[in-house]
Image 1 (cartoon, rainbow, N blue to C red):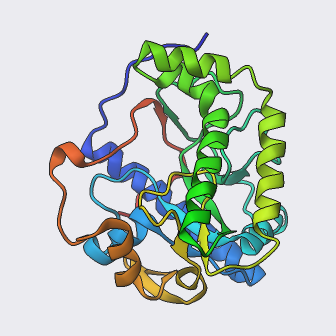
Image 2 (cartoon, helix red, strand yellow):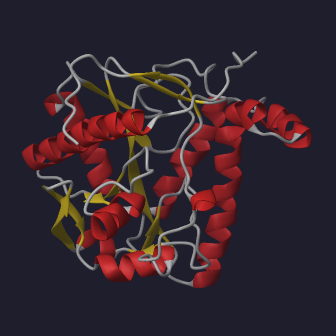
Length: 282
């Protein structure tokens, strides 16, 4: 049974301290990628923050990095050679037993940032940034729609172990409890097989297979992740999508409009601990 803990009320100071750790993690991604000659891009809300705010979205408590599949695999290998293991660790399903996400996380040692309902997961959960692999998907819209359904089903199987605790609906908790009986290794093996099939041919469209795609196109244009440029984020230069305006309009619509408070998303966290040596640079 999951340990039930109430969500913490993060102060503005807490959030800025979290963001300072996220910036440490982004710097480490940049350093490893530069050493290994790997392409990477800040994406999603992190790119939005860079363009609209010059850094973090004020209420954001995570950061996102995207890599085309070949670069993701190279980054995973490079972590074994170049990562500063005294301060950071990389997790995905290939090196972390019980890990249930189809993408990686780079985490800060000595920290803790546990989302409500995930306290029972059997691995360390330090403050993290998401490291997303982008896989080929069909160029035709109908093929992408079918792919989206397939990805949705695999994702729910992987999420089930968390969903049976996190969902507020009793019916959903029951359904996820049933789905959680599917062996994790079987779901991961199917995911790996599906990803390999998708990448047999390079297409003009890509997506993060195991993360929702909030648009009716069910994917993103590959060129956005191939044509990169240096972008200022918190006063530092990081690699990002060169045509940031087109990407952000495609993903967010009128991205310059600040959402009202009720639409500002943040993780509900039950445990928080900062690393002792964290740099408070923000």
